[in-house]
Every structure is written in structure tokens, then in C-alpha cells.
Length: 60
Ligand code: HEM
Image 1: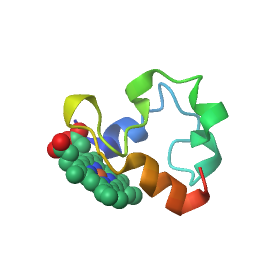
Image 2: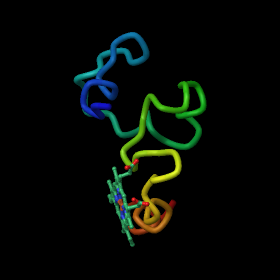
Image 3: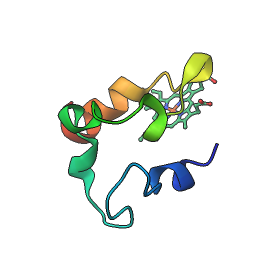
Image 4: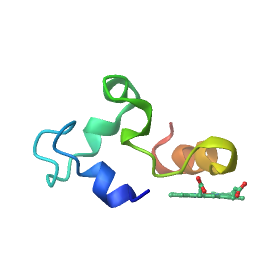
């Protein structure tokens, strides 16, 4: 699956080309279906470093 295509799907996102990290906060994400945002992949081979990477990035 293409993260770029899904992450820019106007069916779910208003103004999908706008750089707006706030739409992916923990609180904001709950309004989307699970795999609308999947920078770390998902399922059984999902990224094992996800929590660590998010903690390093913005003290998740
Ligand atoms: C911004 C940082 C990172 C991003 C965007 C990222 C993204 C990804 C993605 C997309 C995958 C493939 C998942 C799939 O196939 O569904 C993956 C796999 C993996 N990532 Fe990351 N990753 C990040 C950081 C890290 C860190 C910090 C570690 C380790 C400390 C890590 C370890 C791994 C490993 C071991 C896999 C393979 C898991 C498997 O195949 O079972 N990643 N990552």
C-alpha cells in the first residue's frame, strides 16, 4: 500500500496537501479509520521501533 496515496486521500482529509502535523496527534487520529495514517506500517510486521521513534521525535 502506498503511504503517500493513502495519506493524501481527500475522502478522509480536508486539504490533504497542506502540511499539518496536528491532524495526526493522538487526539485527532481517533476520528480516522485505523490505516488512514500508517507511517510505521502495521500488522504482524509493523515497525518495532514505532514507540521509540515517536518518543524521540516529540516526547510522545
Ligand atoms: C521515524 C522513524 C521510523 C519510521 C518512519 C519507521 C518505519 C517503518 C516501516 C514503514 C516499517 C515496515 C513495516 C511493515 O512492513 O508493515 C518498519 C519496520 C521496522 N522497523 Fe521501523 N521505522 C522507524 C524507526 C525505527 C526504529 C527507531 C527502529 C529500531 C529501534 C525500527 C525498527 C524496525 C524494524 C526491526 C522493522 C522490521 C519489523 C519486521 O519486519 O518484523 N524502526 N519501520
